[in-house]
Image (cartoon, rainbow, N blue to C red; front, side, top):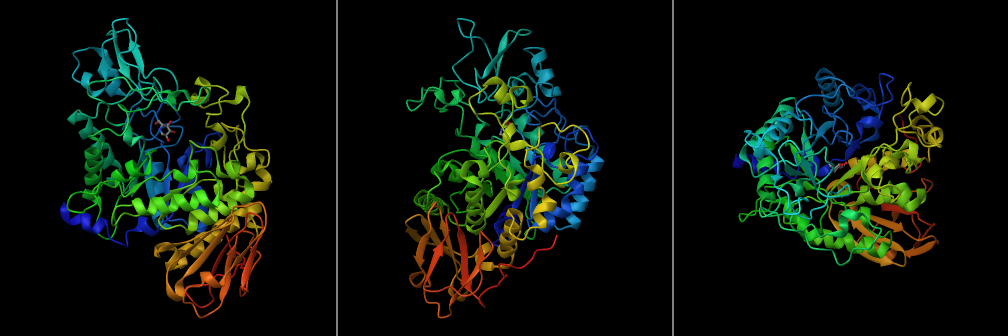
Length: 564
Ligand code: NOJ
């Protein structure tokens, strides 16, 4: 439907201006005392999410699964795992989200299924089965070993021998996650139908897992050694993924998925395709799907994870934002991510004060931000003892710092309750020792908490056109201070972020552009500044500020007390 594409690219599309909040369902809120978060728990906490000021939630997988990879091993794409609830619970969650004005984005895991999925059970049953080619089966190498040198992202070979038929099957992740053969038209059809199942139930889009893995080399050639590999690093990085990642053919599938979403979208309300892609910028940009006619036919938001790996320095971040902005195809919307369920939390990467600075950065850059649940509380990684480990990655590659349990711990809600109100049972993962202090209720009662900072930033972003759709203008770096402006004229806002551990003075006059009126403090990451700005601002260590004219766009007093 070519007409729809134009609507979907509308400058007013909700996802362009909105903020996405990722919920890892096992850890958000347990409603039945089994220690595992669930859909009813999410529903109970939706008013918190709406009051936070975000526009959409993305829920990590809750489909039936043996949980070898905590839901990223799907055994049925069109149902809910009993540990998370039922389809009726999902419908109730959708209804409540709509009532609160929240969009709902699901996680689609198309690269692989669970090894217990009926498709795989059938495929492995015989070499002649009709579903044999739905997966990637190959004969052993002459030495009876795996067919080639491909490595699993979770360590070890990407091949497992199935004794029943004497062939190996490919898996880019666990052996319990066999890879589908996306060259097979029936596989595409089946997955697109699963998408339609949820789209009919009203979901607003999908975050598509491991999308750049979908096509593998048709000749199954060996991957080359990575000359930059450092022994002791993630063993999957020993090889360059030349024949397993970002191959020709992937883009066509992304566009096909987009067309499925567009069947349900309308110019007023488009459905969103987010692509999980860890690639250098120039390759990432292909996932927008710019065609010869200048139409963007791919994912509206190929996830931009580049802040996650960036060295935390003003110069580096300045350079990154410039390069990213410069590489965007015409009409493409930027997006930024600070963390997710696979990466060490921002508060652990840059410290708690740094995490405040990071929040201001994330929510004042141009484009759609994605927040990871709990980052708004300043949650840090929670180290796990060996006997507490749940994550299969840590179990397979112990002690290398690759495990993902630390960033998946339960959300603390009430400081005075057992398990901070997450569960009345035994939590599936331990909460942090400081969970009472971090709890939502304690932070709501503290006008200068991290949570209040997030709420103010989100409120400003929503109210200020400069922030949610204005231009981004780099103003350079002064010492350790990153400087940029958003918007124009009297709506122009200036953002100053001091990445340094020392105070830093910044002359304001040169940053004012043609503004006649004096600049005022709109917000400081310390939440204790207001009033007009003098000729220069002295930023405290790791402090960030937003400056604007008092009557310009909207003005939210820095010290205003937020309500729940
Ligand atoms: C990326 C997901 O975010 C991660 O959690 C998962 O383990 C792999 N893909 C495999 O699905």
